[in-house]
Figure 1: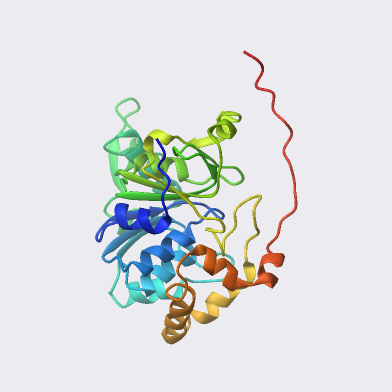
Figure 2: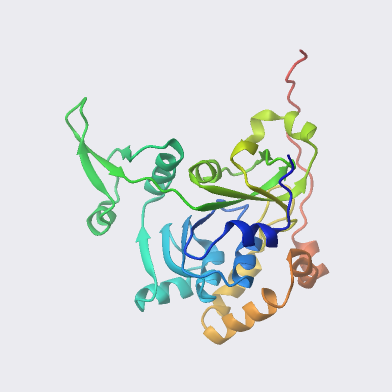
Length: 300
């Protein structure tokens, strides 16, 4: 059964005020378009969870969508701090929980597996263990040694951007693989945004690339260029210039609001956003072909 719908419909139907939202993707495939649609629809009191929050959570916090952030490493990658999130935390306006990357993914793995907690070997994150009460220790019944455990993370909704997907929700991802699979399996509801919607036969031709299966997906949204200013491997490059620009924009709340008015509220959807970026940006972010070797799955 087709799960195709617009991104606007998916956000309206599956993201509710007060939800715990996980926008997945590591370095690339960050669903910026979904974050912008959440801002447009005025969603409030969200708990925003994500490894490496990136600029999208800075923008969502600036728009007043969030009451709490859960993260592992927070920053404008390669540039500096997320100024808005940091300022709101320091002002006491935003609740927060911080984890190491490993413990954040361990929480998702526990949520995806239906486990009450996930054990980890002691890590170098001693300061986090001291200030975050969600880090606990239990005794390993086999060795008698203490092990660190973290609770499951079970988002109300996970938003995952992919290169291609069929109408049922079977999704291909390649390039850097982050926590997309774990976030999707841990979540109550899953929204897929895709650069391309392809026939089921394309997905079936390369089953090992299917990280997200249809049976856990609620909505499939065709959203080309969804990940800008991050990138989608094989489709467009990372807009490094924008990450530098945001560092300057985010120094001023007035400039942040002007950005949101022009680039979020001022455009109806991602098509208009991409057109507004202009041809110079389009050409700068173009990527060439670098094809993988063919794989023979054999005849049967």
